[in-house]
Every structure is written in structure tokens, then in C-alpha cells.
Amino acid sequence: MSINIEALSRDEARDLVKGWAQRLNACAEALPRRAIWQLASTIAMLVGLVAAMVMVMPVSLPLALLLALPAGGLVVRLFIIQHDCGHQSFLPTRAGNDNVGRLVSIFTLTPYSLWKREHALHHATSGNLDRRWVGDIDTWTVDEWKKSSAPARLYYRIYRNPLFLFGFGIPFYFLAIQRQPWFHGLAFRDGWKSVLGLDLAILAFYGPIAYFIGLSNLLWIIIPIVVVASAAGGWLFYIQHQFEGTYWRHQDGWDYQVAAVLGSSYYDLPGFLNWFTGHIGLHHIHHLNSRIPNYRLVESMAKVPEFRSLNRLSILESLKCVRLKVWDEKQGKLLTFAEADAMPA
Image 1 (tube, helix red, strand yellow):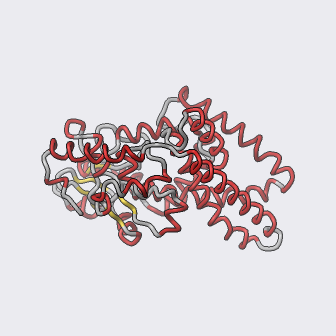
Image 2 (image 1 turned 120 degrees about the horizontal axis):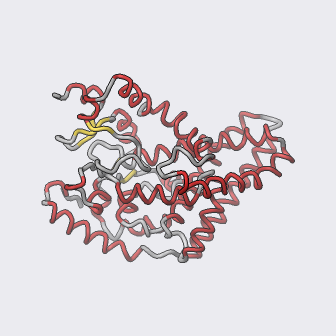
Image 3 (image 1 turned 180 degrees about the vertical axis):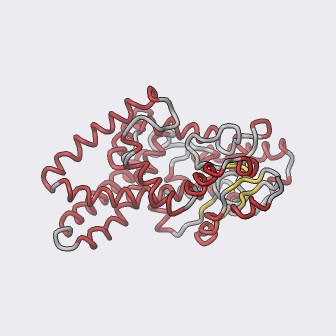
């Protein structure tokens, strides 16, 4: 079943999506047993893989680094758990969510409270051209691209280059930027406790491990895992909003719920990747109702069958999206740099 929401009037689209949101409410309840099993099993598998890396490292560094791939996938899964805690959806209570979120942050290296507030701004402003820049991938309009200076264009080209963004920028953000309270979407006073609190927890947790196995061995474990996890997680976040027919509107034409479903993709991944990523590929559902825990997203798809075809992207289709860089307000789609340059001023 498919429907062209863009062909509807603004009020018709809003009413349609509002009805979908109401159907999803049945899944917006945390299930403690499933949550605790997901958390415990994921941490146990990650600890097992790290232990294996420690044991094989003296024999074969390449083999140890190979194990960083599934370990990084497990950190992505833990990040999804932390993400759900930030939305107060993983467990039934606020205290439970906040405590688990802070615990998991030791593995994801992401300050829980700071990230929770930044991500809430992302949800509150997603697709709004007048409220960009916090928790989003920088996206310029054609008009902004054409009016920008040569140095600004060079910056944007480098920033949007996938080799830079996923090979350096996002891993550097997770490893370095998140270790200090500046350069975030919120003021210093809003993040310093969260950032410095996590830094102290990291020292307390990883310090004894470094003492027993050696600092260099620890870094050979942590850095590859975080690079894999951050690059994969960054790609997921990117492709969930950076596809050709995504949604960007100015404030006077923007609607929160319509933006949620039109501006978020359905990333149709193979089963094992859905497991590692907590089914976050069902991102249009998540944005429409962020109180649905990741372990109930598949169940929620059955509540609104229209979601199966809405903004669906296969892996092959998603790879083609990296060419898209600039938003064309007239056509309502993302363009390549060449297409943007060809547009009339």
C-alpha cells in the first residue's frame, strides 16, 4: 500500500499522519524483560569480543582488528539503547532510563545528558530550514550555495565528502570532541557536567584495564571499535535524512509530524544488520513516535502498513545518496553539486 502525501493538501497530510501516529501509540510502551535482556546480552557479547581481542593481540594484531568489526556493531547496538533511554522509551521509569543511559555511555563514549538534549532538538526541528545546525548533518539550499564565497564552498565540499565525514569527521567527534564541553550545539554551561562526568567515569573504568593490559593495547582495542561504531552510526544517521525526496520546509510551511514521516527514511537492511542497529532503519516510525522502544519497531510496522513503501531505501539505493549535497527548494529534492551549479541564480 502506498500513498502520495505530497499530493495532499497541508491539512489532509496533517490529518493522515496524525491518524498514523495514533495507531502507533499501542507500541509506545517499554517492556522491561525485553529491555534488560537486550542490554545484558549485548554487553556480555561485547565483553566477550574484547576479551578475545586481548588474547589474540599478542599473536595476531590483524585478527584482533578484525574482531573490532563485530565489536563495533555491538557498540552501535548499545548506542541505540542509550538513544532509547534519552527518549525515555527503553524502560518504564525515568530513573531507569537515565541510569542505563549513563552506564551505556561508558561504552559509547557519548555524554548522556548532553546528547539527550541535542538529540531532542534534532527531533523538534527536523526538516525545518529556519532551525538547522543542532544535531543535524549540515545541509545548504541551492540559494545558499550560490551566494556563498569560494572558501565557504570549499569547506562545505570537504564536509560533505563521505571519505572525510565518515572516515575522519564523525570518528574524531566521538573520540575527541565529545571529551570536552565546547563545540556542541548547546552552551558550555549546559554540557560541562555531562561531558566531564563521563570523562571521569571513562578514566575510572578504563584506567585499571590499561594498568593490567597496557595502555597501548587498550588503545588498539578502543580506537578501532569506536571508529567502526561511529562511522557506521554516522552513516545510519546520515542516510536516515539525506535522501533525494527528503523534507525541508521553512517555519511557516513546516509541520512536525509530516516532517517526521516525509523527512525520515525506511532503511531496509538485511536481518543481521537490523539486529546490530536496533531496527533504527525504521526511522520514519521512530520520528513519528519516539516513545516506541527499538525492540518494538518491527511490531509497530504492522500498525501502519503504508510505512513499508514510504521512503524505502535499499543498501544499493542508499549508496547513491552520497552524491546528493544541496537542497533545492523549488523542486523539493536534494541535488548534486553539478546540478546545483546548473540551476539558474
